[in-house]
Length: 350
Image 1 (cartoon, helix red, strand yellow):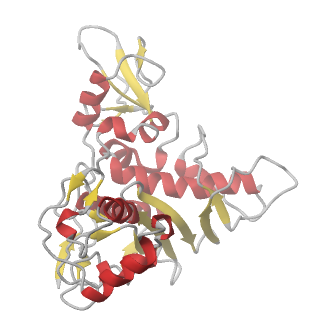
Image 2 (cartoon, rainbow, N blue to C red):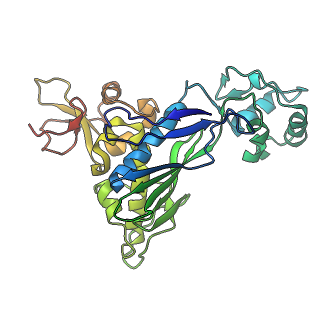
Image 3 (cartoon, helix red, strand yellow):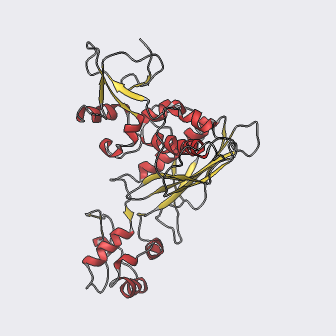
């Protein structure tokens, strides 16, 4: 089996267990496709903070393998639909001509077998919008393809806190061409969290409505409270709005820490308003800053990559005009407040 090792990345230097991610199966219907039918399991984290970091690094490793320009590309319903429309009169579809996102896939000269070809002809030439995820099964079963099928799910289990046996942090993360690394399910045995993302508005604060919700909104909560404190405050006796913000905090640190070195370095001490900054001229008391909220809200402006370095953040900030995203500040930051992108550390306070 071909595997990809989970490695430390950037300045995230904590000891991480060496595990193998079974990325590609040798044979069978999943040959050549991301093969994650079994959860990735890691044990021995000493704290929830460490467990979150391990989950973050696993997401980063898989995310890097799915970036544009990586060795594999996505096959999606959208790409199939576009191809069918453009080639409705073909007797046989050549997957090497299949376009996704306007770019031809490379390294593909396989064709659908005759049975699959006939099925596509019968069902979809008149109704392209009826294509479902199940309709990509002939592609999943084609052993000549080495591309990701959109979407796929990554499930991560991390055992932590040896004082209690069997405590696990479990997250499910979905990757697709249009949405990469969305945490759609969170479980934490210690906090009694079992929640799935739902397409609904966020809960509003209501002191009479308490308990840990079974779903959380797909829209992030904005908070000046740290990720660690939001999670720690989850309780059966807290309001559903407060608890949902805590569950949302898991998703932010895992997904955004996978995307940004600076976020991973701050870890659970981060809040939405934590500033990341640099000093354009060491002789002038002027700093340029961007907050955590503005980072995760503008991932595309930073290349939509995983493991974005501090240097890349500075370069992208320099290319952005001063605005409500990149702001100018003329007074030093207090010790421990904010993250100095040039030093690669929390503010030393000098």
